[in-house]
Amino acid sequence: MSDKGVREAQCGDTTPAAAVPAGVQEEDASARASEEAAQLASSTGMIPELAFDAVMMASSSYDGEKVRGYDFSDDKVDYERLLDMYATTGFQATAFGQAVEELKSMMRWRLSDDPIAENEDGDLRTPEARQNVRTTVFLGYTSCLISAGTRETIKFLVKNRLVSCIVTTAGGIEEDLIKCMADTYLGDFSFKGKDLRAKGLNRIGNLIVPNGNYCKFEDWIMPILDSMLAEQNSAGVVWTPSKIIARLGKEIDNEDSVLYWAAKNEIPIFCPAITDGSIGDMIYFHSFNNPGLVVDLVQDIRRMNNTAVKAKRTGMVILGGGLVKHHICNANLMRNGANHAVFVNTAHEFDGSDSGARPDEAISWGKIRADARPVKICAEASLVFPLLVAKSLAKHREYGFTAQPANMGNA
Image (cartoon, rainbow, N blue to C red; front, side, top):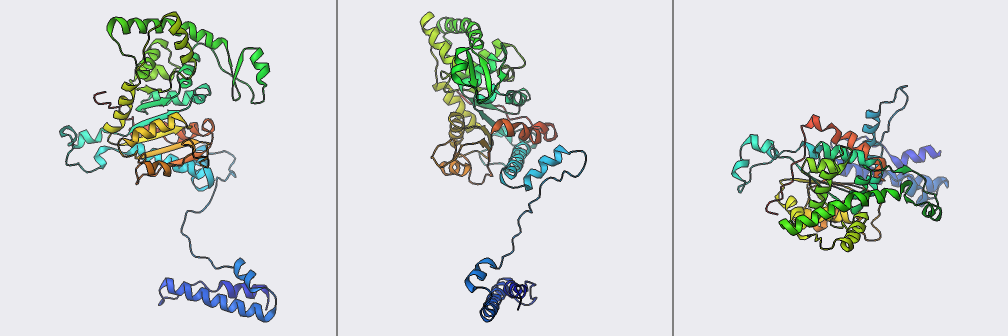
């Protein structure tokens, strides 16, 4: 008998028999096929039974989504359709598609979708009031994304009130302000550090920031620090990182700035490591020239955690890892987890870092709810995030969505 005949005997006729239960039918058919194939292989001496059984193992049925990518046959590329097809392309393209759906779900939700709880506030019992309660959105990003052109994507979200609060690092504050004073330039990852240092040029990946930019920043911020110290001493103002950032956003008065729009729209920006950057350098220098400024971190952790505790539903959009990722996730622990989560980073989990941890690890800590459908895209954020926004949050008007304002309770 030919190899084809042996294959047909192994794979068998998988057409269901009407009167036999599916599970029994498949088991009996597979056993008969294996027995017949073994007999044929033995009689002909053509194929070793062990090898044939391993290679031609019968398949169970699978009802998953079929893999298919974008077809470029048309002369005109449909970019909307191209990104839609990511969902069925596989690998990180499929994670991108899942993240789009997660963000759309976050935008669609209203408190009116949920039954009224027994202990619900009296002013949240009418359909009209419940329809106006939306998801509280926590946005986190590392400083390099402000140095890069993703700053404009982040500014769009803040300007249009699509986030409730922000967590970033010191660089995410100062680089936004500095860009209002001087430019950042494209360079190359291969530029030699020794050569750049001799020229007073600082490299952030393949970006170049002239050191003179930070000198301009010092000239701008020092009088503001003087004023803050005077207000602390004369009026008893207690400065926290978020209050300092709001003040800087008002002072910069530049519509290109993320901080400007955050201050204008009363979106708090939290930066627990505010001294870890050029701002810290300026505060350090200021402490010699005009000592006494005090920054209170305790008020900010109350404000941050209360934002999560008071929220009816929360979503986390976190670009990068480290402090910004953990700070947002830990705040959501205070409410037994976020309802929505999208992580975008290139970190891996094998070193045990929180940066690389998959969302399922956060579920184990109670930082994401067990019934949530979180997504991690393993990709570099400057490449992915603008596309992600284009397919989701940029369509906020279709969903009638703005993020729920941060409710910080009695902070």
